[in-house]
Image 1 (cartoon, one colour):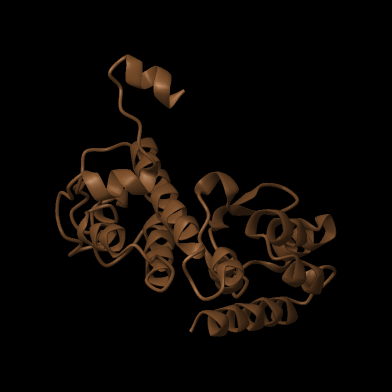
Image 2: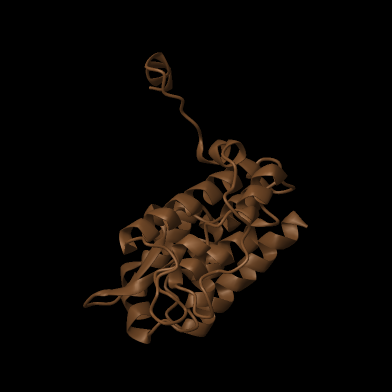
Length: 213
């Protein structure tokens, strides 16, 4: 496909290559005011974790310098005025692109770390692979894009939501098939207690970071 597109004068790029070649618009100074959206919070947490996972410093610097986070704002911090004239769909699309770039950069960097398997397990994932929380009745309205975010969200996730996912083995399958950590997946399978579940995941996260440092 890239060759066919090239024949038509269309250049193709991997997401992380686009970050290196397309200049940033501005520095990240403000991130949507005093109240961040859930998309901004997820992106910022993923970006913070990525500092030790992305080995391509050119990509990393570009991610820090761009105004991606600011463009994920859905509402004004004051007077009801929008910071950017964009729809919620456009905001989500921007968030999706950002997470795809970050995830791709982390995956490419994994092989150059002290423990590729650990780095791969700790990476963030793009929105189409995120763990979306839900209850028996409806979606909860938030999702985890990494093991660390999953562990953090278990602090406030309602009991019925946790019970729903435990009964369906959703957490086990996501960790095993998406994150790619079969060892942790087996440990959490069948655990229904919130604190035990979170503690088991956090201990594994800490263990993985030790392999990288």
